[in-house]
Image (cartoon, rainbow, N blue to C red; front, side, top):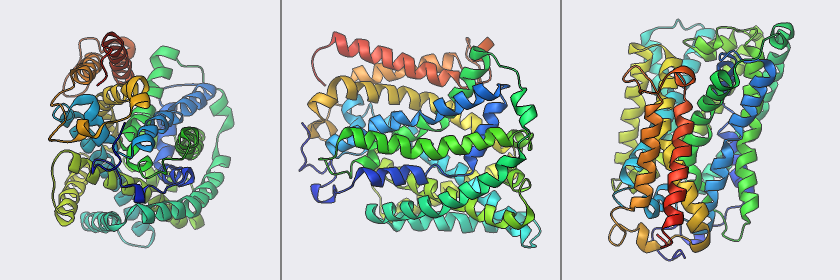
Length: 453
């Protein structure tokens, strides 16, 4: 079992959290207006209204993966990629850990781009002409807002997320209620069914890649602070429902809004496109709400990125860590905003490529916990640099199998997998295949090797 006295785990004195706190953390992290764009993306796969709603339900329910992986943190008191060392080995864990860090940084950059565009649109309403100078100023302001969150501890983080849940959740609800009547119901209900394999599954895969799978790498980072006496069922339900409720509702409005803003899924500035569909008197409040919805996501990403940096054995001062993340948070948005202005193309490309490695990792971590750790726990010696195994080949082989399968069925501007044809072309189905392949290999290797890791 895990050694609660080890520095690999959160100290017992700090493990006082309740499931309700996890509900607020994950609810606040999913009230971003960008969920509306997800809804528009679903419709973009030429699905009927019923198929689109089913896609939104299944996509949002992918947070059940985050809910289940949160149990590992509850049981052990360890953060995600510290626990992952037991599954992959100390060195074997480095590449998945690096991908996890890159994903968090990438999500942070995506949200910074969105926040910058939102702030730029707000300034435009206030009479400031949009220009490169104001874009840079907007970027600097938003980055500064996010960096200040790095000063907060877990208790303050919970309070902030609770505040955002109530205030900006209510404002988001109000704005979405105003958007719903703009739906062209005749056009929406007359959309024909799309292919279940050629359209429905790809639509689900892009949502899952950007939601449940992407956030699975942060699952235990917050449940590790839970009181170990809390029940697993309550933790699972709090995480899953906390994320599902706002995400499904907001994606649903995106589906409805796609009829009145048909170019939403391809807009260079989707936040501004949504704002143009609102009454003039409501637009300023909308942009403020959109900014408020983005901040919790950035806080989660930045906090977990800082944790991941440490598990990569990159131990630097808080000031240096802030500097590293600040530089990255500025350089990536600068590229997106000034060099490659196709926002959603970069967004989907980012999700698809990183999603393969993360899906394979999530499957291995999940099935290792399900088959082994849920019963035996995590031993501190397996997590420590000095005493842990360099490679746990069961986990490494399973992860590599999933990655290879995923890329074989994926195409991108950089490469094209030999099987990325037909229903696998130009979508994220490779992400789902990577998860399934890693899960199968991990199960077989675990069942055929009765020796516990």
